Image (cartoon, rainbow, N blue to C red; front, side):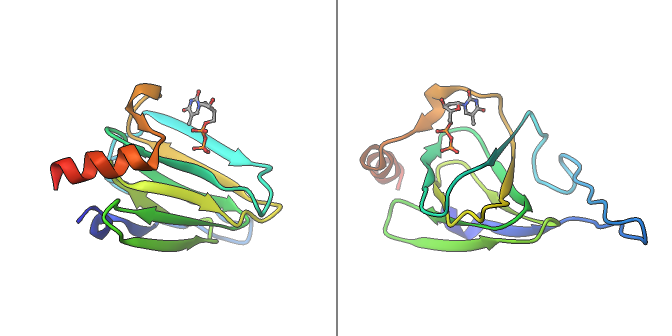
Length: 138
Ligand code: TYD
């Protein structure tokens, strides 16, 4: 089941009296080479973002500031919600998992690392279509 491979990651911290420094290296700290980075901020608490699955791209999401929640769905009726609230932790999301981000704090900056360049054609933005594709491969 795809949801079993969704998991939290903890990144190495190098803190001293000057503050914190967190290191994330592609292929070692996260399970893929990083091809794309984007970040989301200024989303209100009642906003829901994401609401899509990706046929090819794997992601790691990190709230480098503030908090949000991510719900992942497998399209077979299973869902898990994770809280993102520490800058040295992230969530790994494999391909073909439906994701929804919500409950953004006012200071939320959600950093996203992706395994592929942007290609709108590999996004599934209809939940019904996602369920159909998952059922076809089940
Ligand atoms: P969208 O996928 O709706 O964001 P979210 O997953 O947070 O709900 O993307 C918002 C817009 O940005 C949309 O027009 C597509 C564009 N976009 C890119 O051009 N490149 C990217 O890498 C991403 C993630 C989005």
